[in-house]
Length: 364
Ligand SMILES: C[S@@+](CC[C@H](N)C(=O)[O-])C[C@H]1O[C@@H](n2cnc3c(N)ncnc32)[C@H](O)[C@@H]1O
Image 1 (cartoon, rainbow, N blue to C red):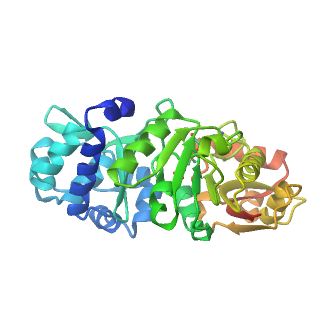
Image 2 (image 1 turned 180 degrees about the vertical axis):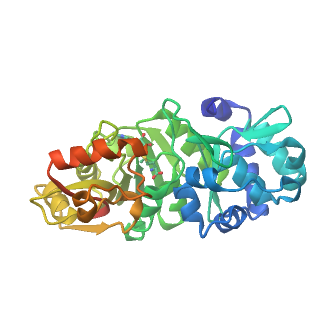
Image 3 (image 1 turned 90 degrees about the horizontal axis):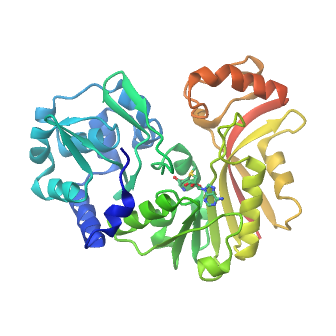
């Protein structure tokens, strides 16, 4: 069952209790590198981008000797059960009480599970829904509750790598999800805010602002209509990690429509820089994703449109792969490998040259 984030926020002193949880986690130095080491991964981006794969593959540790990062990583990133008797010893009394008091732990038959995802990134933390659960090695069950709020994942990090181009004034995190971009960027801007069409995302973002003791504002809003009335005036820059994917009926949003939303929001809010992560299907009569994006943004009068292809196997089906009918093993664009044939058929029918994940930066 997914966490009732509204009920958590409605509890007495929820803000204070979330701040205390953040302090406990920081005191423990529970961080990305600590998590990666605990799980035996090369780096934290990989664990977070492919957490279900790690949950499938990772050995079950000897929990009697496990440290805090191992226990937290199993409970909240790999979404695995941990023997209840080891929790307090590994996490300490204060953190255990804090997690329990916020309803983030569920106990049954001597084992404890997490009731949400809790992702460390540097020394910040992000609560969100869990997308799967795992009973142990070779066991992963996908969970997609209604109005699911994703943990920070590969596309979040892909966009994040370019957000240094944002101007220092007000920053709008469009489609904020769990609030990652707004919260991680707080120190670089005069103010940060986020909107999402999903009210549960707004609730998670609000909780995460408390958890990280960051001053950020989140509200329900639609990227296709958002204007200065909802954002408290103009913003200097905005970014949208768009929920685009393959047009097999599972993309939440078509890429060209997502880019129209970004362009429209930038114009209504007088933003000088707008950035987006987007999955682009490049037709055979186009040279590259950059050319497709140039066309989509033409007509808005932007001064520049710059495309950076994300060099990651997660979001790419190269022209060579399309030609030899192959979807790379680590590609995250399929929710299930059984979709591969249907996808390749659809790409061939639409005369697609390649599929590319890209970060586009437009400047007014
Ligand atoms: C791929 S997720 C990105 C979440 C988060 N920003 C991140 O990078 O991890 C896309 C988010 O956009 C939101 N969304 C989709 N359509 C939207 C719209 N029209 N207006 C505002 N948010 C939207 C979804 O609810 C979802 O939270």
